[in-house]
Amino acid sequence: MIIEPRMRGFICLTAHPTGAEQNVKNQIEYVKSKGEIAGAKKVLVIGASTGFGLASRITSAFGSGASTIGVFFEKPPVEGKTASPGWYNSAAFEKEAHKAGLYAKSINGDAFSNEIKRETLDLIKADLGQVDLIIYSLASPVRTNPNTGVTHRSVLKPIGQTFTNKTVDFHTGKVSEVSISPANEEDIENTVAVMGGDDWAMWIEALKSENLLAEGATTVAYSYIGPSLTEAVYRKGTIGRAKDHLEATAFTIGDSLKSIGGKAYVSVNKALVTQASSAIPVIPLYISLLYKIMKEEGIHEGCIEQIQRLFQDRLYNGSEVPVDEKGRIRIDDWEMREDVQAKVAKLWLEATTESLPEIGDLAGYRNDFLNLFGFEVPGVDYNADTNEVVEIESIK
Image 1 (cartoon, helix red, strand yellow):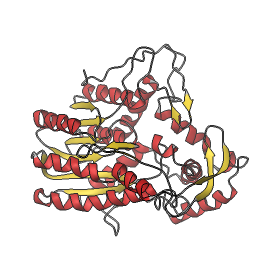
Image 2: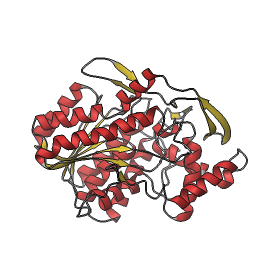
Image 3: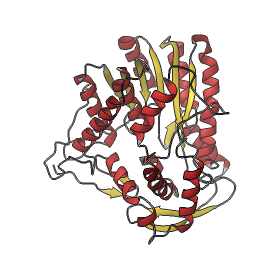
């Protein structure tokens, strides 16, 4: 079939397998070009199919020669209907990993559930024995707690008062004002239950209880802080409460791993175009201004550049992992540079529908968004007849 992007709001309903495959190959080539990383050799990535999770799997495999198990929840293709992009990403990753002689297996299902945890533990036990790095990179709006059976839904809301500021429709380029009503206590609790550290802790406890963590094992979860421009709706909003919980959980997990010489970290990453960030009002406008500045300064990074630097310069740098005063790894250091943020704040005041094409990088934002779904990837013939039914080798 000829596959074209079909949009509904901030979601693309189709994905292109050839574009996704080329994207994955490009990321692999980038990692290989940066040289070997003295990293982990047996890696579990929870949330492995897109964004930072996919980049972590690629960096582990092609930077350190690691065996990887990836857990994700993606929609497989059926004839006449494309898979979700993460399915095609994972199929391409496995294909390239196997071609390179690397162990790579995947599990598709709800990572919050006890059943998928059990399946993963059994696979580690059978094939790897133990793992020495666990990346936790889940981004889901809904979680059913496997112990209580309660389904929680996260919300994007400020706390305390209504938030009003500029945003942009990145499809049309229209800059407008958005107002978001404040959260109630139930909203906050639900968001923490979905996006906090509860499930991360469950995974580590399950692995530890069955002796599946190697001596000195490390686990890393991903977070974001961002600037004062976005803090009312992000870091000081419901998501921020969840991230606070995630960061506090790192200390709890760290204490539990002391007996095996293990460590737990939260890495605070840069603002990037992801399916999740595209849904947050204000963030697309902020990112389009940020991209313009960081590209001009020569310090712009996508997911793969960010994670490769995290692994090489922070996690596996041959000495102590550098952290901030709250124990967090800060790989958002270039984004949060004072000169960069001062320029963003100035441009923010100037941003209108008319000025944004000149002062921001909305075209770059749109391109990155479409790339997530395998579209607008250089070198791909989008007029070619494409087989939408692609299998992941390890999932039968």
